[in-house]
Amino acid sequence: MPREVGRTTLHRGSRVSFELLDFEWPGGRRHQHEVVRHPGAVCVLPVHDGGREVTLIRVYRVSMASMVWEVVAGGLEPGESPEVCAPRELAEEAGLHGGELVPLGRFLTTPGVTDEWMHVYAAVDPVPGERDLQPAEMIEVHRLGIDEAWRMVDDGEIVDGKCLMTLMLAHRKGLIESGAR
Image (cartoon, rainbow, N blue to C red; front, top):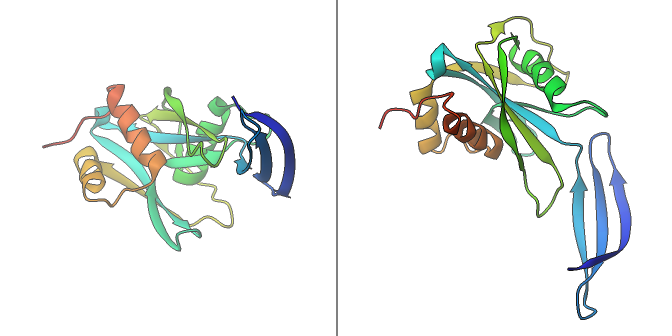
């Protein structure tokens, strides 16, 4: 196994930090690796009508300079548990409240670059309420039939990894239908 022999913080931002790690591999070979440190995040799929409908959002992503289809998601605040973060993000981004919060699992987003864990939930039968978007958020909320959501996956309209993974996990847990073939 390689051994870490040095670490330098290149940038510390409000949400993430960027580090340069020095490793020594067996045989004495050394290598530097850049890593984004992330506190973790949640994603939430609102499920309605016995799994026949879901709520997805379209978010303006500066990195892509376009709107992207996603599930509700957000970063963990310092000391916040995923179970607390999930309903907070659901209310803030989609204006949905309550319902049964069902854990679906967790996954690493991009382990070659970051240590971010994504904690995945379904919110079964949440009810509409007020939204509380942050000033830099541009989000549209869309309630879709599950067949339409799967069509969007098949047609390449939904390309966000956390959205794809959340739909797959919700289907595997039996919370949403597989869609018409």
